[in-house]
Length: 177
Image 1: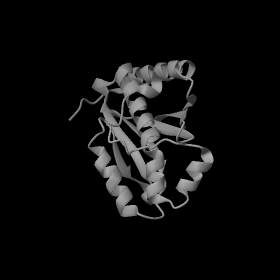
Image 2: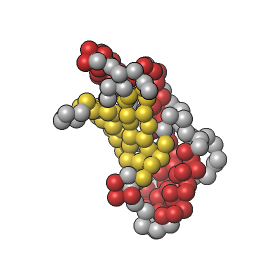
Image 3: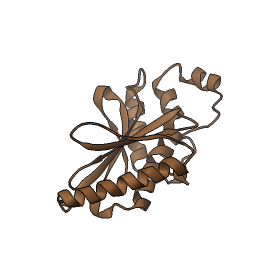
Image 4: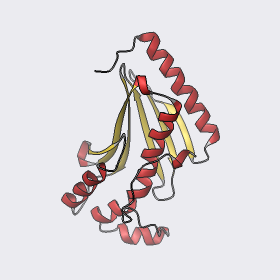
């Protein structure tokens, strides 16, 4: 089990994340917004403009032992659900520090968790970069599996990317570099 942080330790981590998010807001052109959620949880979101998916919003939730992170990828598929879920499960093998999951209403999410002892700015960059680049890489291929209208939408949008078909590993922090 990871170490339990006391209130002072949580406050230090919270400041560290606030400062890091303030820097990425001003230094990365694809970051549209960074803000804190209201409520009992210590929670932030980072909204990033993408090329394949218009926007990816990554939620960071601070606990006493871990920082959880997640992003919504797409709604429950209208068709080929079994194949789509199999596809994302197979992609999990290639991911480091994140995994696809099925959430509320069978929507597809990308999630992960980091122990607070390992939290550094480099790790925060990697987390955000991995989630963002993975969504960018797989978005259209997953849409085409799960939604009949996706191919025509892709053509109208002008996207020519062949997401998910190269067999190359996913992840990395290129989104923030």
